Image (cartoon, rainbow, N blue to C red; front, side, top):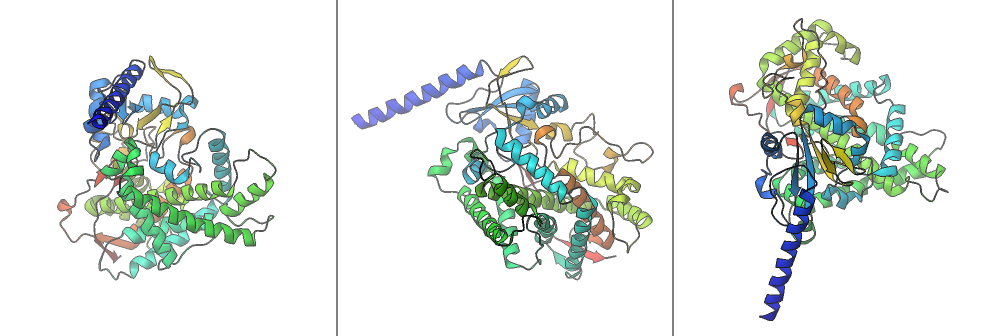
Length: 488
C-alpha cells in the first residue's frame, strides 16, 4: 500500500511539474490551445490530417501560434508572408527535432544536422551535385536515358492493368544512383527491388497516425512495440547497403578521377584526415548518402505516382498536354529541357501537380538558432517551428479554387506560363531542398515522356477516381490505384 501511495505521489508531482513548466513557457510564446500535461495538444490534433487541424487553429489564433507535441512547444506559422519570413531568416535556419530520424541518423547527414556540420555538408553536397551535372546538360542526358528505360518497362505491361508504384519508383531512384553510386540498376535487380520496398514502406509508416504520436512522445519508441521499429530496421538495412558500396569505392578510389558523390566524399575525408574537428567521416558519408538517396528517390517517385493519378482522372488536361507535345516535340523525338519554354501548358501541368498534391504539407521542421523577437513574441533558442506550406500552395487569393486541380493556376490570360512566388514545394531559403534543380528536371522529362508515349486509361469511371491522400501528416500519401498504359 505504501508503494502505491509513493507511486501516486511521484506521478502527481510529475504532472504538476509538467503543467507548471508548460504554463511558464506559454506566457512567453505565441498563443495557442491549452495543452494537457505530458501529452500536450496531441488529442486536439487530427493525426491523420495535421494540416487540417493547423488551418483550424490559425482561424482561432492567427498566423502565428503555439502547439505542444508532447512536452515540447512548437511555433506554427501560417500564410505566405510569415512562412516566407521564417524560411528566409538566418535565425530560423536550424533544423527542428524529428525523433525517429534522430534515432536512425544521430543528427548526421545534410537534412537533419545543425550548425557547422550542416553548413559544411550542405555546401559540399551542393557543389558536388552541381559538378556531377545537377541542373546541367549532363544530368539531362541521364534522365532522358532513364526515361527511355521507363518507357520500355511500361511497354512490357502490354497494355494490361497494372499498379505503377514500383516502376515509377525505379526511374528517379536510378537517376540518383547514377550520381551517388556511378551506376543504374536493372529494374529486376534484387538489391534494387529490396531498396525500393524499404523506401515505399518507410514513407507509408512515417506518415501513419502512430508515427505522429511517437514523434510527439518519443519515449514510446523506446518502450512500446509498433511500426516505428520497422522504420528503424529498414533504415539500418539501407545504411548497411550504402556502407557496403562505400567500402567498394574505397578499394577502387582514384584520387584524381572521382566517379561519383561517394568518391568525392572519400577524397574530402582524406584531405581532412589531420583535422580533429572535421565533419567528413565515414559515418557522416553514410548518413549524407542516405539523405540524398532516400529523399531524392521517394519524393520524386511519389510526385510522379500522384501526378499520373491526377492525369488519369482529368482526361481533358492529359489531352491538352498530348496535343502540345505532338505540336512541339512530335511522337518520336525525346523530350528535352529546351522544349519547356515552348510548352507552357505542360509546364503549368507539372507545377500544378506539385502545388495540388502539397507533398510535404508542413515542411521539415525548422528551429530558432537564437532567442528571436518575432511578430511581438519572443521565441527562445531551440524552439521548433512548423512552416505550413499548405497555407502557401493552397492560398485562395493566389490560386482561386485551390482544392481544384487546374493548370490554369500557372497560366496568364494569353496562355503563357505564369510564375508564382507562392510556388514553394521545395521550401525556400537556406534550408530549401538540395536537389530542387534535379527534381524539377526529372518531373518535366519523365512525365512528358510517359504522356508522349502512352494513353492513360482507368478501369473505373473517371468520376469515381478518388485523389484524396490516404494520410496528410509529414507527407501526403496518394491512394493506391491501377491503370492501363496503352501505347499511342
